[in-house]
Length: 373
Image (cartoon, one colour):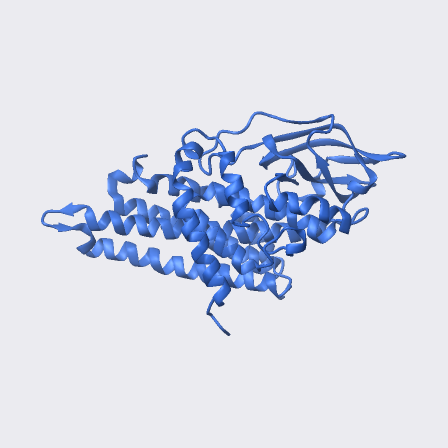
């Protein structure tokens, strides 16, 4: 086992860290306080090739790996996690095209996604599905020259301004996957949601009313797309877990900075044993989470079935992020609840991750079902 990053991975990590620290701070208030996505950041992300990290340069990607994707997600999330969430959706959609689309469709769509010319969103969740694909009610009916889609998708990130959506629907009783341009008649979105955290990642329902798509918009043939859904969710779980590592790193840095400057009598509270214990717990949980994420990314790069491993990673890392950010707030004392301090936003963002891409309870079910008996 080699626990070292490669030279290209280290160089990429440093480049993304430099970019995030220089470019993202002006967007923090826009996203968190105004709950608005700053579209001016998209060309900056594309210039750094942060929309297609593991994809072939032939399709506009960076030709890197999933470890590099995780590294980028960590560095971006240290400054502004909602931007990393937006990047995640581009990778999930790009990955579906990469694995299921025709060569012509890859050449048409993937460079546009990687270069920020097109924004994608991903439509599985529905009002009544929870995390059960069998409960999907969105339907696709085949006609002579097209498919007609009807249904509602819920909690869709990027939806209010996306250009293309990957839509899971039941076709002839089985789950199929389509890509749908959002300017087609019958495609609409509801008002964006006001959320606790990860604000600025515009989230809304998508309504499909007799949306007609060409026959070649069916991805990978009819039916059998439950495995494609599970595979797509592993990309989401990897990115979400990496984002939590970034939040934890930021929380630890904020806690140390505050403890070094907050005075108690004649010395900073950093010298208090109670603070030592909190910081030590934060640091140890952060490192355990970091290496779980690195391992999960490594498994993706090896092409290994990683559903259980990604569920374990998401369960541990997302719940740990809430603890670490809570301990960071504890170091801040009463100031931890003030919006004047970064730790308050980090804690709100952290809580979101226990609920996204399958709740912690769903991850436990996924893990137990794959344990040896």
